[in-house]
Length: 325
Image 1: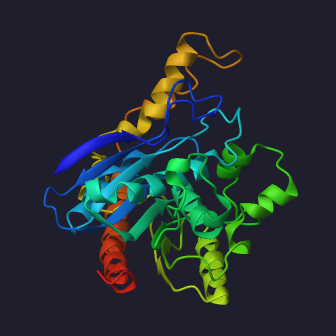
Image 2: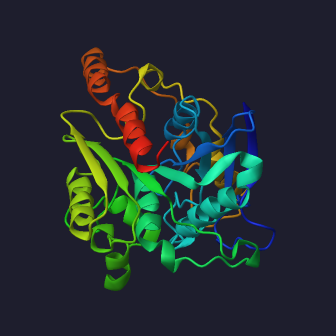
């Protein structure tokens, strides 16, 4: 396997004002054989406040081991909810998809078999590209004529709606605390689905108490109304953020934690006093070690994982049909 880091923005292109020196990148997981592989771009969640390692490398390796060449996007986040992200994460993902397609030969991928796999707020970001891909023009002529439309999407416990069932923290980080009604509507993705959206696979748990399961129902219903191919699986139990719902997840074993780079960069700026009005330790909790779980709660997690861990097999079977893999 070849694992490499690739900046997606050229010098001078990236403008988010509170990046603290971070610039978005992808990490590639490539088979060394020259055969063409389908591509999977993994988009971890984190409420648009961080990019979760638990939904990054382990997911990439799950698809890599099934014959995909995989890519993980570390995109722009707003952990301090000071500077709204607005379109920047969508620009990041759009560029990442175009970057992978532009370099299809070097990455040994079929550019017409490229899927995205987003989790939670990363699911919102992935679904945003599915419904708004035509709106996102690339500033570089190098990418003119290269499509940013995914050929399929996996949306795992996704943030979708800005309405009654919204995950408010995600929208605060993305749009600010007082966004316009027009912007809220634009980013309430169940209202934006047309027949131009790619096929979508959704899964979630019925008892998700962070992002209500109604988010998935709203989007799948919109797909049905627009004539978009979709699959929708709702598992009986399980907390938000199950990722692969496997033994490694239960043991907090998430592989390489490069997706925390934006938080580390911002922490350095806070500690040096370069950001006024914010405590230097405001982000320390992002790196707090996990506590010892209650034994009964651990049993529940093990049961929940036993139920939900089948989703990758379901998704890969569905992708095989949709992408003719």
